[in-house]
Length: 206
Ligand code: 3PG
Image: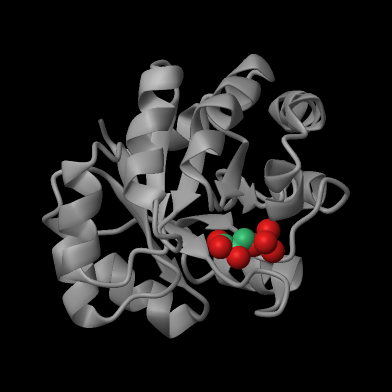
């Protein structure tokens, strides 16, 4: 799979934090039932690797990426667990090299024109723009479209259901990421119906 294939299946990628392994399967089922095809699990809880495996078993049709990738070790563990793609919040030169050689597609994290140019030189034409709202949001992405016409972004960070459509209307935005579809609180409270409803709403955005 190439990154463009992943991005073509998603307008909204839910960014998920699973703290308890038992929540992984019902969460995956709720997101899939809502019509989402691509999700990002963050590598920032003790059970994240096992949760990724559990989500893929529960909902085999889902494309499950691992986010919060910060090191070559993170890449190794995540691909071994079956991650379909990788997402990093930012990218050092060595991490860009490791992501490029990971064997699965990746969205390297950038927040400035210089970082986007560095990632482009390393072979990435699709990037996570993070943290989207604090880093300049829609105005910043509009400014990048002229000088970097061959780069597409997945803005993430501070995006809500209300803000998502304006991002998705930008020509250099392939999709948006966000935790609003399934927040930590919703997951901890087993609010699967609410998560499914949010997923349905997110899946309807174009
Ligand atoms: C991430 O982990 O990629 C972001 O923190 C998600 O951002 P949000 O919680 O503001 O949607």
